[in-house]
Length: 152
Image: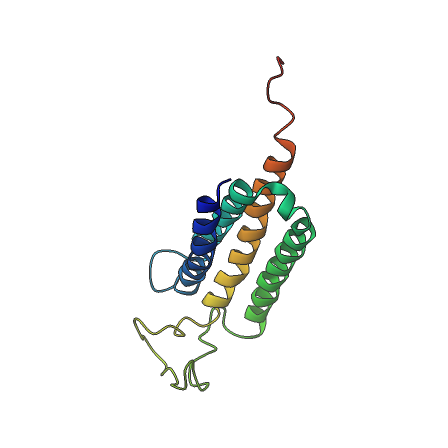
């Protein structure tokens, strides 16, 4: 790709990562969540493949597998947390809070850490989706080149 495309991609990548993290983090307050934010970040893998080539991400295959496994393990661990305490209980309420302010018990619309374990579940799902869709995009880029020009 040209220098212009590579430069724009280098500018868009951090912005896309921040937006994907925003969608994952605010999934309990706005439309979005782990799957949607993970799909946003995984689309950046497609941007890297198109811009810089799939060969640049060949070493990332193991990373995708590890992140997907960690996302699944985190989700299962948080699910087992629900056996001991109320499932999706607001574990962050009255705990010192995010940015120094504690969240009172009860309904708190618009407060970021008011959803208990739900944001943590969103992050686990987000990691799983990022790794899964990213691996699919990478494998399609690596193995999809052989079928061009052949009469099947």
